[in-house]
Length: 409
Image (cartoon, rainbow, N blue to C red; front, side, top):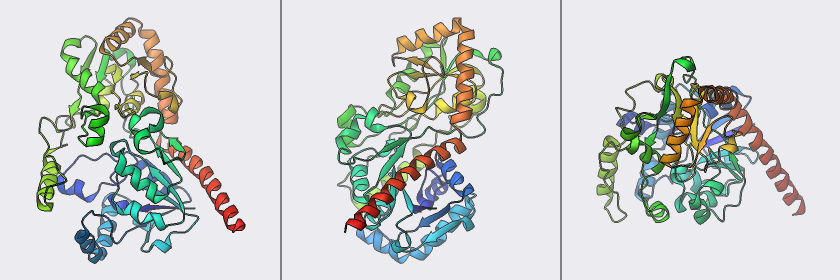
């Protein structure tokens, strides 16, 4: 079996990409476990490195084409620097090197060439629809690439209203996978020795594109987190907050369509250097923080995706508190058994915390069940196995369909 990525060295969900090194931006390789899992199996992992099509401006594509040998060198250096055994990654130089029975995985936040070049490729193509890219541009790219299925940490067709606006023509199966916590997230402190209240964690980010603002009216992607953070000083008896604003009080420079290229480039570079450093948020050990509390909160995103903090806190032995409006059942979790549900309001959150502060035996039972569930189902090996099983079954249907079409012709 072969799995093909397009410009893997640019995939920030799996690799510490070049700009992360240059601008010293925090790294969130949330899907690195998938790449590592593929490499451990009897799978040939390939990296197709495109020659152009990455940029909106044609003259940049021409430069990119000329500097193609340097891109090959960059890919080798970046992968090696990130601890990936480059001997296990087969580099593909031409589109025709991608075989009809290959599985091609495309990420919706990847460079433009991932999708523009894949339209001509005959293979089983899988899209990863990331929440931050949900919109018309992503929908158009995925449709042009002619993908056969999607996977994501939530089924946005069920939880996100934006999906129905822009992906109505993308009638493909959507497979849900949970977040996976790093191995360092472990239970270190006995439950009874922890503070009898909750810790609220997570980053507050913003989407200022017109589509998001037209849908929700406010640029905040996690309004529940913002609500919980802002109310923390008045609710110190119930929870503490270490939530962090991604911009940390710095207003990003808006990149407008009418800006000249140099102006856009200057704004982008300024934003890269000043936004997203979150020095205070990364100044403490999150594992130790979770181990200080009996409960944890990580407010969900309005677009329909929970935060990775729910998995990390459960792995550390906290009883997780999640909004009942979100689809935790998609991960196999049962409210009242694996986590505590509330209706999304501060009043209900306060009441639920107060109840479990008084009923500590019931609270410990939920925390223990959540801990066991996380370490059984939310591991890299378990999720990789489940995803591969779903994708291979779907690929089998695709290949059978193609075989029938060829026979009828």
